[in-house]
Length: 177
Image 1 (cartoon, helix red, strand yellow):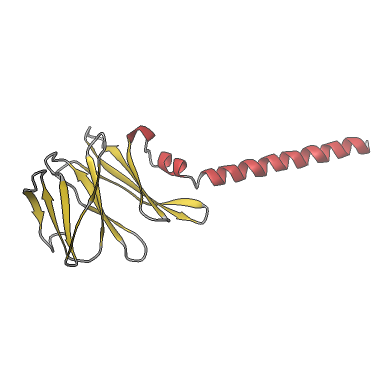
Image 2 (cartoon, one colour):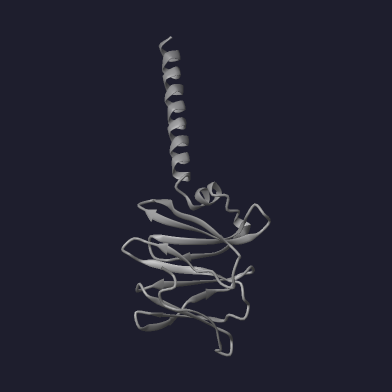
């Protein structure tokens, strides 16, 4: 009888260990990039680019389908805290212009400007920011080109050029407030 009780206690201990381990695994999975993207209905085949912004931030750009059969650029901004990832931003913008401009606000007053290019003639995007000229990073994708730039000041001027360096579009400072 005592041996039988010992086996029951052992089985209970094994069952509790399995339940705790499974629960821990589920909690760990909910802190993964895979889980966060699936939770926000981002299919891996729609991912256009993944950009590491720094040690704590990751931007996942994807083609977003809107209900009225239009598509646009979606972005998930993920922040790493300790051993887990959290969703900071989940946004999408439909295709309605030659180029979009959106902003991601990070900690320490950092801002990342980003968007897509709908006009294939645009080859270079120049920012005039706190008196300095710098080009946005352009990421070539199978869908549309995506661009990124870390904004330094409050008053930026944006110019878009073609491959011959002809000015195509300009957004003067103060127009994005």
